[in-house]
Image (cartoon, rainbow over all chains, first blue to last red; front, side, top):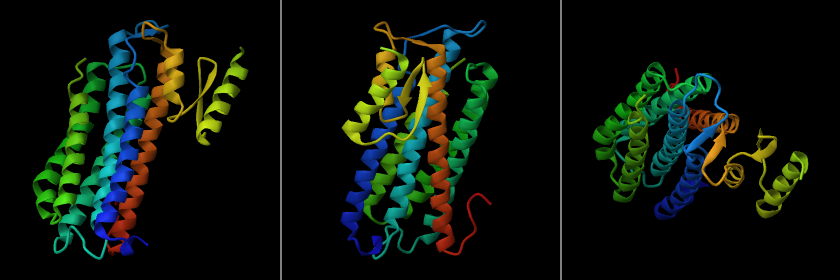
Length: 178
Length: 93
């Protein structure tokens, strides 16, 4: 049972899961944005549109995989007998709700991207980047208000690193111009 | 080699190597397992100049987006379960 596993062992287990998630992320990133030329384009669809859409999918995949790792790390850090959020359960709940809002933005972005598979127009870019900005705003809140409430240094470092990795992937989407 | 035998060969090789084939998509007439086997097979389907067909790219990325949805929904379910244990309303409410 998770509650009987010593804290360092729990962190090692989470770290193992984290590595698996990173491997999945790497696999997903390999799926998208791996090509230099797209052949057999439909009339009216440009290389730039398709490759930017492909890059946005790839980067969204990295965001989702790392967000999942963040969620797992946060929940693992709160397990008894020694919670990294001891005395700060309000911070823990706020972090969970913030991660949930990131997940909701990811779902909205993925659903939208599936409806426009060959379109990286200005309006597509604006809508996807709007979801990404919402994700970045949540991550900024987690950094400013969540991390200071984590008492265990190892858990704080791990969660902080995951947040930074999500921010890096999200910023790649913002860098995609039309 | 026909597409059918190619697909069988791909799936068989991956299954014997990893014992793991759960999802697949048809790309350029070839059945490509998603995630675990997809990278190798996509690399085979992309020519040496880095060219891939539009149809293959779209199919692969649609599968990647489905994975994003699956991961995100699983996260939400786990978070809501955690909140429920604490007697709190779900995040998606």
